[in-house]
Length: 545
Ligand code: GLU
Image 1 (cartoon, rainbow, N blue to C red):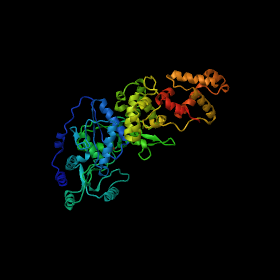
Image 2: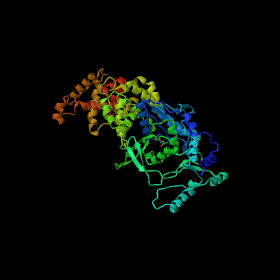
Image 3: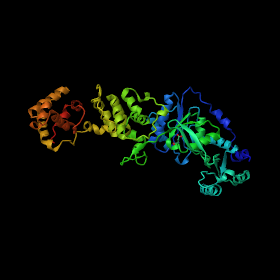
Image 4: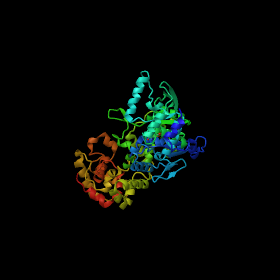
């Protein structure tokens, strides 16, 4: 069969050869050990945590080897190709400060020598390689309509092959030049399929950086490499782009392991060197019954990376949490290196967990509390304001007009303390947590059996109240008064005989705290009083529970 003639018949306009293309994509000049990785998302309108996890791993592998990471937009699936989706993607990447060495800007400018970095702009390249495969008899045109194709495949299998045959040969694989010409003259559209060389019994081996050597059934299906609209499905685009763009590690989700044999066959057919794979585990969640299931955009708001922005988690907290999922050694490293940036934690691909990580918001909150605890009050204020500017315009005006006050709020129990308070895990919760700095409380956390005692203590405290100038002075005033009213001033004595007292000094302090903040627990009350100022404190003490 003259495959060259068939190739010419199918692609009369394709004049370039693979060699011509390779000239435009010279081999990267890399130092020993330098990795070239990429993030290759299909913009869908949201960035899923699983995809981001994969991007983060790629990013780290590149950065840890002084290598390169590029961004490639996989938008050949036209149903999903939408500008907004791309904008969302770029926005999320920017929010998380994920910078790529090579990419295409939103307005279409390629940064880097290996572009275009958007697949829909590369269709001419795919055709060159498809033509080459046809000319070598390794691929063929398929004129079947979608459903006809399937039925015919089944018929062919029934008539030609023994039972349980794994082959999925396409009925068009052996069309003659004349038959093909007739279709073309008719104006019939066609897809291009790989003519698999396998018979369904072969097995292949490939290596995965995380999972090691893997063995699987070889591909035995004539799968499509170019759709009738000229665009390539994932495997063909992946093989060509990653080869031309000089990727040397493909980090991608574990769900691609099943189709890797097809990719391996494609690399071989194209005469390309097989690229190293690194299939990262998918992220799971536990359901209410404690069973594992994949984190899903349908049920889990945290599957969308914007969730962390909308709730005001610092990027560093999110990254630390992702690192925790990548490698459990991070937690120990963090304990031993409390002051270092997570960026200094290095891991090798083969150290990435093989066990599917389980997303746990409680754990993230814990990590985030520690991250926020390392911020100075000034930084915390700025971050809170930045968050408000995006998500809470009312809050912005208060934070800005009372800047001095709210910087002090952020500094409470934080600046200058070796062990700062760790009770904030995101910026969103701060408005509620510090509600008593925005408004005089209207709800008071007081137990009903304490009401009378509390009212008595407050009315006496009001009478004697003078704004204290130190925390000690404040505490001594309360202690004195409490003693006079029958509270124990010595906790040891109180514990020995609690019924002899109205309570201990801590209880008396609690009543004053509830009057001023509405809550039983708060940062240092004296600091809160200082920030609120004497007039406001006096007003608040005027309460009757
Ligand atoms: N566009 C593919 C996806 O989003 C890329 C997979 C890969 O990284 O190779 O799943």
